[in-house]
Length: 229
Image 1 (tube, rainbow, N blue to C red):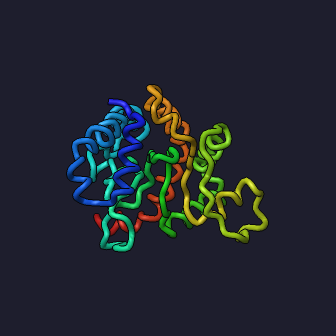
Image 2: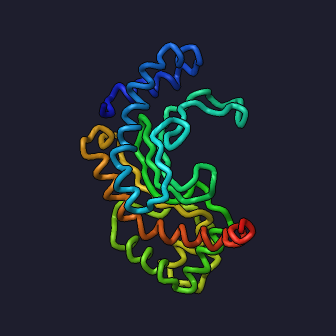
């Protein structure tokens, strides 16, 4: 079934009620209004995503590719039990530091993109080295990024540049502490029958940048791979 206004209404109400009892009493609604359309969206874009990277792990289930709506309160017992945000995250391994393609929705906005929530410092340093060296995969990523108008690089830049002699278009990347392409807009697109096609199209635009991210990550972890032999 598609997303509806009821999807967002349930997420908002569940967050306000903040009660295990309420959630379990309305678990059928959660499955029908939230989980089912999210799983259908993941399934719809899966073929296009596997064309980008056949090694992506795509399992349209909660706790796998789809987020939980409840929090692990051991990490923040003062926080609410339930979120009003859901997302899916597609990458090569759930608990490994790979870049991902992700989509997030809430009653306030939609976001989707490619990269990391927080990039490992070693991967950031490898990415900077590739940028400074003019690596071919970096050049392809840079050209693809410049040619599209969907995504913007998340702003995790240092307040003061550490690369004053580099051109601004390189400083935008060299001064980042983490790497993620991101698009944000209002919630109306959540109800569009063309959402899956739009996500597949946009993620394809980001594919060369994803390839660059994967290369930097691979170099950063090359020692780990050798030790595993």
